[in-house]
Length: 312
Image 1 (cartoon, rainbow, N blue to C red):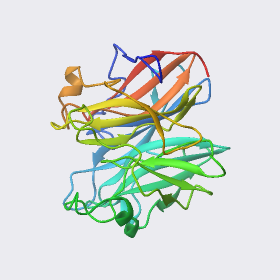
Image 2 (image 1 turned 45 degrees about the vertical axis):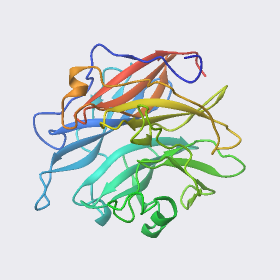
Image 3 (image 1 turned 120 degrees about the horizontal axis):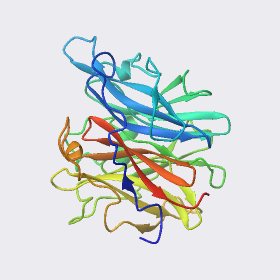
């Protein structure tokens, strides 16, 4: 490809994590985010298990798993994030994305009340104990970025998928979010966000990303630009993963964009599952001179793809 990250090769031992036979991660385990301190990879992943709320079979929680090689993980016995607030029940805490700024971890995730998905945030010092900050945007902010006339069936307040840059630009942090178009928002304090008027990335007719685009892992600063991986779907809702390069000095300016996917559903366990024909990446980590891209497989299991790349 000549730019960005990749090519990525799927690990032959995929899935590297799968649901257990019982308990809070017994139904599905997927859509992980990742952090690496140079020696250990920490994965936060979405797990689905029995729901105690009336009228719903399953709810989502966030689990933690640790690995020295990025492939073989030891799961922690209890979830680190589970639904406790009105905006998370009964659907749960979904699709985490992680960034570390200073000595604090910032986690974005989807709180789902069963009707409306809301982009939420929590902070932690150790990845185990989390302070919830609640929804990132007020429901009325939806009107500023989601055209109701284009998506009349989408509930007011709907927001998802926040990928935060760990370096500020001119005193402000930037986040890419959205699950149809990818929008940008900026903040001086990582808590109060202002949404840009126009999307940064939109679907392309006739491409693998014709139906929707959605941010992947937290952006990575490369020598040639700010790397943002993104998930996408075509008109048949076949999901693939691709990348863009963004101008580090202008977080709303795309310099390059994939013509073909970096990752697509080619394995049987990516084509068959809770949601068929899906690869969905939310975590990337660098360990031992390799980039490890962690992704969900058919909304059911968890896999990794590997790229050899110079250490940044």
